[in-house]
Length: 309
Image (cartoon, rainbow, N blue to C red; front, side, top):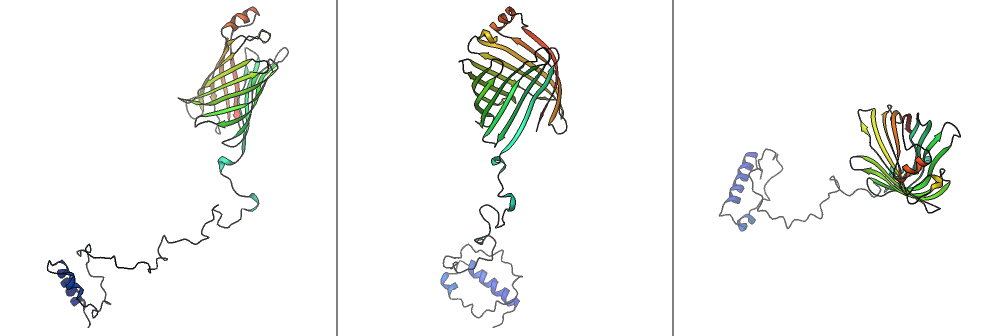
């Protein structure tokens, strides 16, 4: 039996009427014989948008035998990707790559290398480190060198293990040596960024003679534009007991402040500066310095450079 498009449309319309008719039952639909219908014709013109398919039962259909391998999202081949993302390609002479956080690196930072004109001395503060983002060894030194008379150098140097404690804070622990009182010490400290982006550091030194020293420091970078930066900083030093041989009194001994106007070069690795520094004795240290005929307060123009690589 050959059915034309016109007859096929009529049959489809009749079937739709029968499906939607309240008098159509499942028995009536099951007795319909579609075996003689030729469905090979072009059915692209048929509109199925009005047909209600919600009442059709697909529970009896067997989907297990359907071949879905050609569809996107099927099972990938067993060797599609290796766990290390090499895809079977060897790494060659350079070896397996490492994540940046796990790669040991090194760096040197000179935060201060400047000259105090009124004091006629050179101040320095430098740090070198080697390690990863999680564990490092740090070598740090700070102090001053006189450029007249005996050209004495006073420095406090430390070798410490460095590790992050939180997002903004890092811890240090190690050993130190102070040339001013010719004594070794055990050092522990915390360094990080306080609220409002204030760079803060606190270090405690326990010397072999039982003396305990505490250094506190804070620094802020007030950026005027991409290159000019104003950096105010302050430092405090305190001791746990008197040591008249080294000019030390119990409590806070001195405060150092400085304001720098810094110009960062294009790479920001080199930054010359000019500034003003001020130092003053605190507490009982003021009276002791007067007795020894030493200055209690001093100020000086400074100029220098800071850099890192």
